Length: 414
Ligand SMILES: [Zn+2]
Image: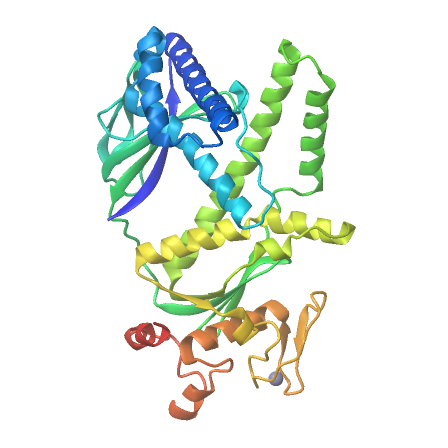
């Protein structure tokens, strides 16, 4: 059994919206007050108030405040837990020597929402067939209409109410058994900039997934104009400013949705076709370290294509489908510097986009890297040579590589 998130959009009525906003305000105040308390107690005693101590305090706050007493108790504890996690993350970063921002007070616009720990305690989802659309009963709010759908239905566990760009969402975790059909071919995948990804498969075909570039120049221009419109309207309480903010957040949401849609569809399509996926571990952090003007452009396009999100989705879907996921150790294999045909190694600059080797191999840099990774996953070397010797002299007896081979491979990959 695994946990998956399903997000429903909520459609509250006017009265329900008022109640949701009221709840958001109460959770925000609990969060900020708890933070204030932690700071105060630390200042006086040099000791940090823990989660358990704050839960006790919460009980006394609820006795003093009627509005707070009416709020679902577990959900308030979840808010305290969030603060606790923010503290834990802060100390972890400090310990790791990273720049760590201290947990901050949150204004209502930045306060994302609240959560529930147990289905039936504060929230109950009543969705239709296959968990498609329906209603959620929220304590203190009533029955709210929701629209959305679970890919794999299952038992509802926890929920979060989210307030984003003026809309309300219910994000539910569902315990389920995700299943997905997987293909039978093996492939190597190189993630790139010129094309989004280059895929070489064991039937000797190569194709590339075109780069969608969600933030191309005209699109950036639109965002810039909208951002300027917001920053020109300095008074935060005016209607014009509110309208400008709404336009900007609608546009950002549109881009984010298009990106998400592309990433989901592309990764699902690949898993559908392939039973083995070999790819490199990505280090986006190193790739996007700050640099000169050229590097900034590069950074932008790297972040625009969201490679780590994509690889995570691909990996999750591969697991659901029972496909084999092989992470090629970059330092050991050096996919971009190794020739897929003869195995010789030669350093390439990031600007060299072709692979040309003395052995006669000539293809794009990305295709070469994808082939090297595929070979490494299948045969344990960069060129697939073992098979050419064993397999009847024909190098690609691996054609239409059926994956009975995979059992042995799993054992071998470990
Ligand atoms: Zn070569």
